Every structure is written in C-alpha cells, then in structure tokens.
Image (cartoon, rainbow, N blue to C red; front, top):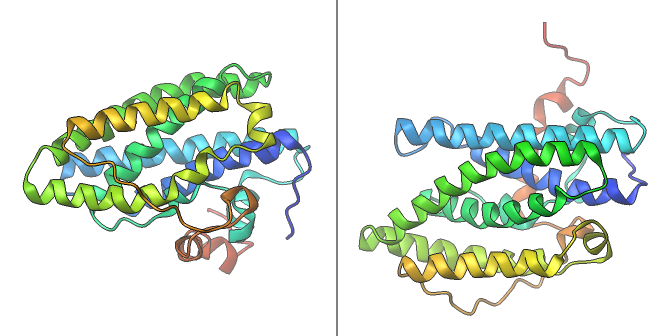
Length: 251
C-alpha cells in the first residue's frame, strides 16, 4: 500500500502526529520496567496519552485527505522514510535519565506547539488542543520534577543526566530549522524556539547541569523523512502483527 499525502495541512500535521506516536512507543517499552510501581503507572499513562493524541491527529489528517486511508493505515502501513517525527523521540531508553531527559525536552516543545495550534483555523484541531494541553501540563510537571530529582540527587544521577543531555542535544537543532509549512501553520515559529531555549537553560542551571556546545549531527532533516538508525528497529516491533497478519480482526 502506497500512502500519498496531497494536502499541505495534512503533511504538516503528520510531523506532530508521528512525533507523538513514536514517543508513545518508546514510553510503552518501559511498561513493567520503570524503577518502581508508581513510576511505571505514570510512564504508562504518559504513553497512553501520546497514543491517543496521535490517533486523534491521524483522524483529522484522514478527514483532510478525504478518508482515503485510516489511522491504522498511517500507523502500520508506512515505512520509515514515510514517517516525519523529530529524531529526538526515536532515541532509545538507554537508562532512566535518558528517558526523562528526552521526555522533558519533548514536553517543553510540545506545550508551545499545541498552544500555537490552538489558534488554528481547523476547528477539530482546536478542540483537540484544549484536551492535549492539559495532558502536556501533567507530563511536563512529571518530567521537570524528575529532572530536578536526578540533577540534584546523587553524583551518579547527575552524571547520567549530564550524559543523556550531551547526547540528546545533538537531535535538537533540526527541530528549529523551520520550513515554509511550519511558517504557514505555526503562528510564531521563533517563539517556539525562544520558549524552549529559555525553559531548558533555566532548568539546567538550577540542577547543576552544564549546557555544553554540542556539534549537531550532519543528517538530513526529519521533514524529508530521514531518521537515525533506531527508528527501523522500533517500527519492526510496532508494525509486526498487522503486517504479518493483515486480515486479522479482534474477536
């Protein structure tokens, strides 16, 4: 099945939907593997929120595209070059500090993204944003709290957090290389970066983390469907059953 996308708004929304989906899958990998039960539940809830967010965005995309494809088609019938998520969210769960740092970086970005999308001309999207922003507020409180606990905890937790930040920052620069689609559907691209940088720098300074000069990766942009080596492995797991048994139905 070849999924083609013709509408510019749909192409733009795929970036947001795919980012939510891929991060949801990464978070789901921690189900039963978090440090303790309460955190296991919290991370699982964040994952479910992201899956639900992605599904609703795919429904909006399907409507825009004339319902030629279903949300399941978008999730299970595309190959890695047909996904347009930011590379940050496909990075693996190396340890708990990596998971939290990735989540925090995403949440700060997502909060401003959905704040701006709440003024969209698409009424369905505006309605979704009001719900999503409440979810993001919870997720951001959770991830920010853990950044303080890890950064100000032990020498080991601070070191692991610093290592995670040093690596994950490599995947940030591309997020703010806004193109014409971004500029058409975001109300203020520059403010997305400004809000992100200010919050990230503030928290880092308060948790004894150094914001080092990181050389960005010389990889092509996620907007063109280019990814790190990790997404292929992630998709092979996420898409296995629907591809192996394409006609299977829940009884």
